[in-house]
Image 1 (cartoon, rainbow, N blue to C red):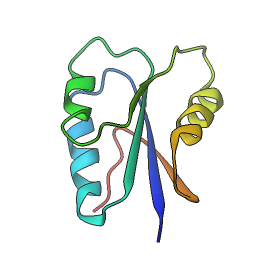
Image 2: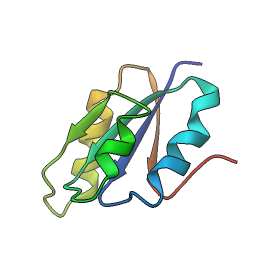
Image 3: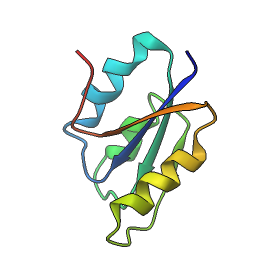
Length: 87
């Protein structure tokens, strides 16, 4: 299955590695939209994927999700937030 996982995040250095690590065994495309992190979230993301994009927060989760989905290249998309993970 061609699946892209799109993640919306901001200042989640405590959670993002767990989220991304849980996705690695599946070979999914991972797309991360960062809405303005000031911690080490972006540095952590870049250890797992080059598909990291800045999204200027506009108080609209739908806009952030749509932005992330627009960066995905696969026909199927799942959206997560950075404190979610696969068991």
